[in-house]
Image (cartoon, rainbow, N blue to C red; front, side, top):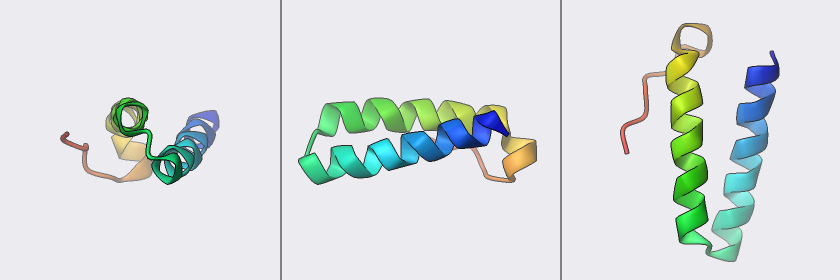
Length: 51
């Protein structure tokens, strides 16, 4: 479950970065989330994100 919490924290960070207009950091965090979602695809039941 800690992996899901990590993803939730990163999603919150994405919202904050987007609000501040920090585009480069936004995409770095998004890429990190994509890696986590891909790794835990069976558990979360998402398709891998392609950026």
